[in-house]
Length: 333
Length: 107
Image (tube, rainbow over all chains, first blue to last red):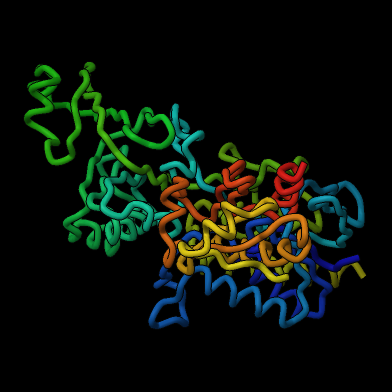
């Protein structure tokens, strides 16, 4: 029987584990088959305090795990399957085993949101990717797209620019939500081209990614009145894209491409918890900073936070949840 | 036996000409998820000793097989039987998921 079972092993879960173990609570971390969370898919992390020269995301996570293990946290590197929060003790299942805990901290974070267009799913690992640091070197001297407009899209584009011949940043809006410093880096990079108001509609290719279809919305009526051949001639020659048609307010393109890196956001990993209240987007509803609708079940990090989504805020939420869990366990005695 | 290290030089002998099925973990030092897979592959190398040859290939230092077998994402764990790739698992998985695929390949 554990005092606390922590579901997830990103910054939120591991920080919580450091705090609960230091409070002498018997702690189990269900870390998942892929432990470490989103930072395992990054390179340099320059905004985590305490590392003036920056630190590699995977190194930061390995350090956090070591720190939690040092104080006695136990780890199961299997995926969480299901939980029963209806009575005490809570029961949590991972792989073929079940574990009993007096309290639970949900810190399952969020996963890549895919574009959800035809041709995408079957080409993951064949040119479609969500991890530029992992896959960028396979695109040496090739041409790739990064889809998205936030900091992670900027980072992916910058990482890819070190290897690829050309990086095309495709964003469906006309404004980026990325931080100014990241936008400036992207703008200063001569290999990166930006296409705004543009959505990828289909990914084409036999064995691997070969082409994409995109739609660009525009209010330029004179442009829309032209034939696709004329538009192709006037625009995007640098991208080797061909206009294949126009609609009332948009142009359809086709463009040869070797890779598509998706960084359009994340989906909270909350659907496995049947008894826990979530909002319309799937984020766990939080009460008093760390509590869920179930007594004794706490929550921390990106699975409930859609506002900040930073490693440091997730770690902070993990700390709060651990302290509240400790208080709650004390009250139960 | 610990896991084997495959290189461009020994790939033909150790993988393609092997009598037993071979598992190749394509990885690189710069890849975060590869670090999750590495310790699992080391454990599986021991568990499957005698039944399969399990090893790693650093794609930074050895680029030929990775490009020949269209590896475009790492970690990729590929199983070879009789010199042919029969199964590729792309992206980091849990230990049980790898065991399941290994066992299927052995049947």
